[in-house]
Image (cartoon, rainbow, N blue to C red; front, side, top):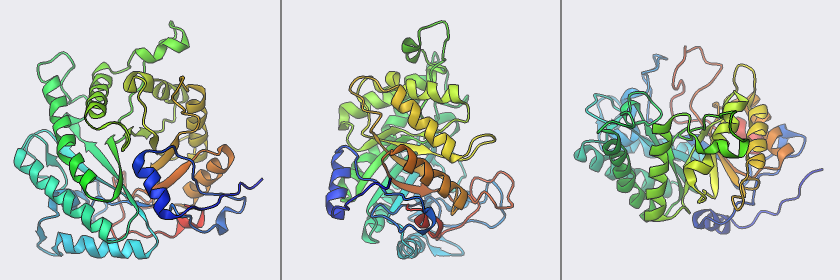
Length: 381
């Protein structure tokens, strides 16, 4: 049976999102996915680079980081801010209304045109100024909301082996460095006047060890990677103490292919958030070797319902789909079907600039901006 949905005014919905009110509005999907118009919550893209070198390699994007270079003039293309304004206008004209922005960062000097050295106060200050300008340009271009995402890399990412060991003298200073970057950027977003949410660590949700010797209800307490879990829990505690939890999705998920790992990741949120949970959650959905996006979505939905602790309301929490393949009809159909069948509230989707049908071998991205927005709206996004 088709669900009926009366679309409120956009301003009222934006106010609800900004205030942290419970998620309830969602796209409506009928059985005829192909012919559905875009909803008020028309999504968009992860907009993180202003160009690409065309070589179809993992490093093709590296020289073109928006946040790192927004104040610069590219020797070939001209002022980066001017390029971005034109791209923003083009993507808005194509129907995008939401964007995922973000900062890629690492501890220590780097020649990268994308990575910011989070240990260098001057680089951090410049990045903050660039984010302020970028978000203002996004607002002026007419976008409804942004998801701002923290992309820690290598030795500043607590999930990676390069991060200091939890018993080392460098562990907590590295967590502090991460937190200082969050503290530097969050006030700019709060003062921007645009509706926003913050992803404190992209694909940063850790999991428990799933120790089968323990009762299932107790397993959430025991991290699979203690250094990772302690770091994100500390970041969450500091964030909530400083700013509350209204404007953040916490730590986004890469939805696992392995069902036990996925259940452990959902269950472990009780350890990470300690009873103070985000109002919305963000997920990255990519088809795996055995499961497509439909099956992953349904499993995530099932685990959030089944692991739902008292007072958490995970069974009705809204989602943002933060990443999915670029302009991909198979992904769109699978996710639309899953939303229709589960009834899960999904506010919007931002595609990743990776066309899975492209010829590149394991690229991080293979599509250059400005990005198209034709396939996803046809399926109701």
